[in-house]
Image (cartoon, rainbow, N blue to C red; front, side):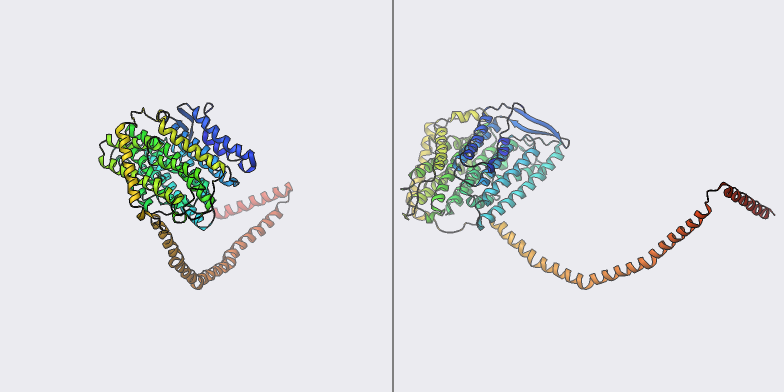
Length: 591
């Protein structure tokens, strides 16, 4: 690996000095490491690095190709933007966790074997959980605990799949799963690996950890979390399961599921979290379709999504930072004092809504076009409807009620300058990708044969968006946010946990107490009596016999020692006496 600098090590090892730095030195350092990582990715050459053998298996620390480079590129860019956004933080712990989180995500992207992948995979879970716990307070701690438990469970499932896959194939190298393209062609281990991956991708019904934890994270922590966990899952699915039919329908369901739940949401970051589920659905569907255009669409949309979703979370986070409020029914009227934040947020909103000349337009449409080219009319219809719903809620409803709407006379101001700069960096990239998509297309795994800016495509998109805007104006009265709680699939493990605790504290605890009482009143006295009887038997019987034999041997040895005088004459006389005695016995016996 002499000609390869692993960006994961830059972040993970680079996290160590952070607690010992302060002031401007720490800020410069926090920007230096992501910058070096970007340069390291730009300098990479495709190939395999860090080959070794461990427990009889071939280990490959880093495998570099176009698919890994496109994800590594956006991960390192996002790390720099996220660090700029978090520069005002004095909490070194959050910076350390963010570095380890980013480094672990990059470790997964370059992992050439399942063992390396698994170690970094678990690193992501623990580092990102800290960003929830760091918010402190009861809701954040409970959400962080649930988040951690879900991901530990997913990690156990993934590890079981890796072991089973390794035993079945004899190899732990990470690559396309044989049989993924054919129905019934995968083994049990392969399905477990798939389950572990789709849990991190937040595929329903395994999605509630995302919308439960992300809104409870710190303002800066949520920005990092929106970028890495689900997109790392998209990467590993693209690497291992391209063309898997199941993913087409799971992704399509995701796209609609997230939009439907966003209708019900009042919490601004939870609404954005549901749209992560929806947008990742496009990527999962593209991977499932598996054609070159579809995989390109999934990878490019992941690239664009990381940037515009981070921008949206930064905009919502800025509002929370200055007002302390995050529910839409408590916000409004702050556009006058936060004009820059509003303008930058709207760039992200237009990008996620796939407006022409914004990044989502040139990436999301590639997935939809790939579905059309593969003759999947139902998938095209569902993804188009989901796109309309995205604009309705993220592009219209959320900014209207968060920034405009009722003038509540809230005391608001623009957030710290570093937060605005980070939002500006993401906004520039959202526009640049939308206007000049070719540099992004050049990074994609396959040659791109797609032109987004055709007359028909632009007119169709604008028509859909304008129709959605008209519907928003006409039915605005029905979209007023309400202070309610939406029940999602996390209901099952919340209720399940309560049922488990009831079972542990009531029936099982009472049973344990009853057994303990029986033991103390009946079994233990019998055992103590038996122990005392055994002790008496041991002392009076076994020990007496052993001690008697030992005493006899000791007494006999003393007498024998007296016969051993050391005088030769005595020994000769003894031999003569013995010989005479033996002769006498022989004569008597012979007669």
